[in-house]
Image (cartoon, rainbow, N blue to C red; front, top):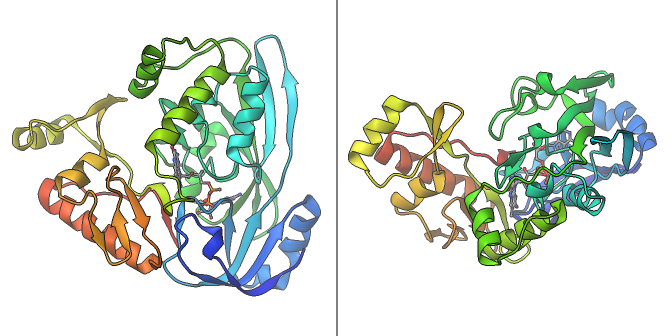
Length: 337
Ligand SMILES: Cc1cc2nc3c(=O)[nH]c(=O)nc-3n(C[C@H](O)[C@H](O)[C@H](O)COP(=O)(O)OP(=O)(O)OC[C@H]3O[C@@H](n4cnc5c(N)ncnc54)[C@H](O)[C@@H]3O)c2cc1C
């Protein structure tokens, strides 16, 4: 394991904003991990673990050590006729794990196909898409306490998962390095295609979701056709979370905006943040080198040369304007560093 100084992070984040790390290292093995935890550069500085950099916005240089996680390995721990328990190291690319699963005919993460980033970041925000969430299949998370290096296993119940949320983003933020995730996947067919875009895909193509691979392919096709590719136009996916309100609040907004779309979700109402941003007039708007995607109001983009600060300012302007119009506070999904 080598620790580098004053390292350029521009290519380490999908927003492609410039930022430098005081120290930088890459871990590829358990040995690297052990060495890292005793290194003075690690012990005496602020730490940031980085996977694909697809859910971060660097707003300034990082005055500490950035650890790029390349811990690899996927193994089957246990299986019976109905299910299989899989352990994936946290530096595995999330979609590679999905491919591993659907190639073997397992069910459970096919709806999460093509979500950028690593396995280790997935529990951070309980990744979700097309009607599925990581918490539906996650059994536990293996982690190391940053302060002591002590190993800890977080059972699913301890992860406190919610919509794009977990204990790792809140109470214990920055206190643990996630080293692996244990998932329990199904061997028995469990298609989840109630999500509108998926249903339409299978209806329009007159095909059936016979295997998890079919669903994975559908999700890949839909995502490729709908979502802006960070390799073409740098972005970090949805910048804000959708907004949850109660019955009383929704009635108040509906009285003023009868066309407000919302969805029932576990006793609350979910309002698409993209709709709020669009209605507040931000879709397709550009300020300097940063902007709101012309087709996806929820996606902020770097048109080239934008700084993290510029994107953060844009996000703050959007938040203020949505609050003024609807009285609703947008919360970033992206981690501001
Ligand atoms: C085009 C696009 C589409 C997207 N679509 C979706 C979607 O459909 N659903 C969804 O949920 N998300 C989506 N995202 C967001 C992103 O893909 C996920 O949040 C993903 O899990 C981030 O993984 P990463 O490895 O890139 O994390 P990073 O950006 O590297 O890190 C994210 C956060 O996790 C922390 N972290 C990373 N690894 C570890 C670790 N091993 N231990 C402790 N902390 C760690 C980092 O410090 C940081 O705070 C999308 C992003 C993009 C660019």
